[in-house]
Image 1 (cartoon, rainbow, N blue to C red):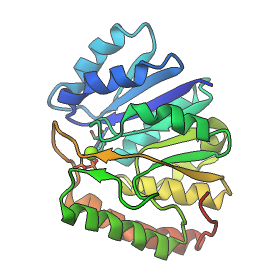
Image 2 (image 1 turned 90 degrees about the vertical axis):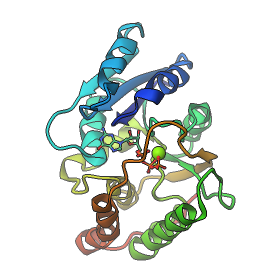
Image 3 (image 1 turned 180 degrees about the horizontal axis):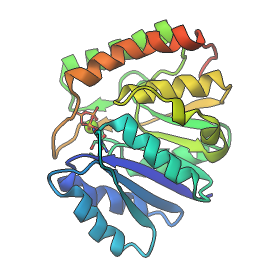
Length: 240
Ligand SMILES: Nc1nc2c(ncn2[C@@H]2O[C@H](COP(=O)(O)OP(=O)(O)OP(=O)(O)O)[C@@H](O)[C@H]2O)c(=O)[nH]1
Ligand SMILES: [Mg+2]
């Protein structure tokens, strides 16, 4: 199986080299960086790394409105136009350790979507202050209650998809432009009857760079679950 990882970046210059090396260390991976015109020059550094990658790394330079969801729509569409068997999503700040990629890929034998989950066996988060853990736990409980989604970690951005499953998702109609896009994708996958599985990961808080979570994207995250169920109803289905 070949895996194409879609990696959205905004001001990740201190991390991009390490994370791309760690992803490309496996011979079956390829990498698509989706940079939102980072002022710190992440996109240019990524271009230089891509030039040395022997064609395994590509950079998509976005212009116009910035957003994690908007970047994923563009990047995942581009990924679906390739012949990769599996398509991955992850953060560039090394919170998602590429060393989990083999486990996640192996889970695609049984599932259409494998989530790298922080909450499968208690809480596996390193270096988060208590309020951050509480916020994330609340967000997950809230999303599950409102939407009926069953995954332990509905907001994880570390995910691998079988390409056929991802191709069925209505990416063109995604409404969330920020982090809530991840919830929207999971909801659509459950509605389509995708087999959703979780693989335990340890999430480590970023050491370099800074968080881009804003009050706007937090507000969008509160509203999105309600918007989804009003449009398409609650979903059901136990996680595996
Ligand atoms: N292309 C693009 N990438 C983004 C945008 N916002 C965030 N990202 C990337 O999305 C990933 C997750 O963003 P973070 O700021 O780390 O969000 P987080 O992991 O929820 O927050 P922290 O735990 O504080 O790091 C990182 O790779 C960011 O560079 C954006 O507007 N556009
Ligand atoms: Mg992060």
